[in-house]
Length: 353
Picture (tube, rainbow, N blue to C red):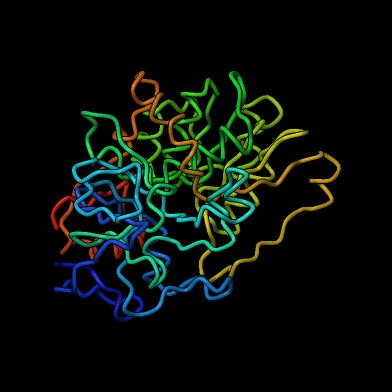
């Protein structure tokens, strides 16, 4: 089968023939119909995250936002059959650790991140394996477009989990989203669907226009105001109830915290680059005096995917609205390179393998 393999950090992926996977007794093999190209793939391609022991090795098949069709089923699998269409969270859990048993599989003690470790080859490939499939894979409703469902592997679900579960966004809340790439635009759309009033912050005019089309009530062009947090504070009459750093650089993280009102909640979704090396300094005294919460969101437990799927079926959410373009496997490297200059809008999705 064809797959896009990381052979050297920052250099084009090697699209080549590799051995097709086989299903373990508890696993399935999925034929990839669509796979998003995520900024986390860009981080992996850059060789980031050695500071948390998560730097993908050379030889890794990347890709962690897939939707596809089951083509092989292990002997111990009970809930899936050949022909089922599935989405797969990138946070593959083992189903047995204390966190998995409590319903927090996205922070499994024995996590195998799809597309980032040799134990979980990714979905920039014609086929990919899913271990512990009864626990990890999610059946898709009939009739949904796999392209629309691709971001359920990471960006869309991470944003949903951060807003709906971690920050408990409610109707009427002000939500400020700092950085409107794929996950940021997902956060804008989800916040609006949850009944929040949204302020979108970015440096790109086209991106801000996209955010408005997805429900942002106000936009802030970060390059055209003297003080981003002050602009958000003014628009929200004293500060946002929830603010999201959807990019992961020091400036957006600090701007997000500073844009909050008293008792506000910051949600960290973006992971840092090599420049930050995993650490960002924060105005802790101000946070204490305002009783600001610093929260984080990492994927989403597969057991809670029904919350998103039911909102998709009712028309409240449309993950496909975030999709910007479809590309081929041979174009993934070009797409990753464009992310270095923030030259993508929304979610690019691979559909030709």
